[in-house]
Length: 340
Image 1 (cartoon, rainbow, N blue to C red):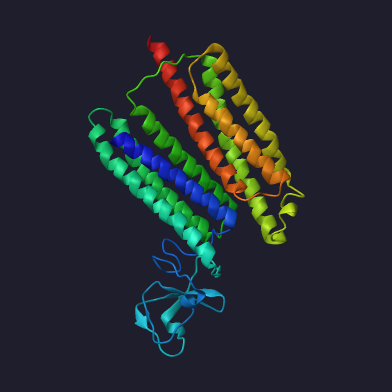
Image 2: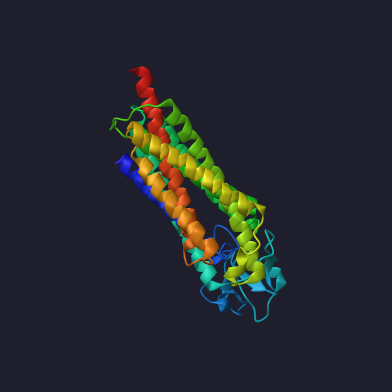
């Protein structure tokens, strides 16, 4: 039951990553300008009229309206008079963004719902982990650490909104998602009773460590390139053919670095195949890398086809997860070799 809960949690965390990728693709990051509510509602509005001042309406503390292109927050529960009264409202001070786009709002809201669902799944996993306390205490301890990290990730999400999508905060948010993925994969690995036969090879293990590190660096570089694209979208609008017409230095680093990532993983695949080490997930890695390269080429050469951007990010995060599991397998093979 516990392992099933870990798998469900991992799938839901990946769904949050997918939802976050869609948020970035659609430019919906500020669809909900407050946190944890959305325009002061647990279920956000669908029409702009709901965010305009209305006479003789019951407002609850914390509800939001837009007045003169700024967010106003109700200071208490009250029923409005015929005219707007400044005494009943205070200006939202986290930032000065006050644009309502219903499509952006609901895309971001669905992203938050996915995050909440993943959080509850991780909490349920942690509760179930208590049964492992007498067998393997680290399972229980790390499961509850996952709960803490999910809470920290939610707080990071709030800081992204408060910073009006600061590139540094977005990168931290993405890296923390991968840390949570790695922790859940580790829990899945150490709670598995099956011990498949795999051969230890010191060079393979060291190369695997390098491959995981390079993928993490590549993801971070990718978030920086994505920020450049976001800035181009703001400046150039929907002219997709111009978004990467004059790329900056980070784009070339990211593209060149991908060659190194591919070569290192190709070496791992070839060495596993030649020596017959038994690490079959190297096939998964190469397949994911090829898909990642295809989506990258499509974005640059074919002007960002539909869904190419979120697919590029999601494939990278899945690649990291598979590589991390492979790393755990090489560590187990090393331990088995040393004790035999």
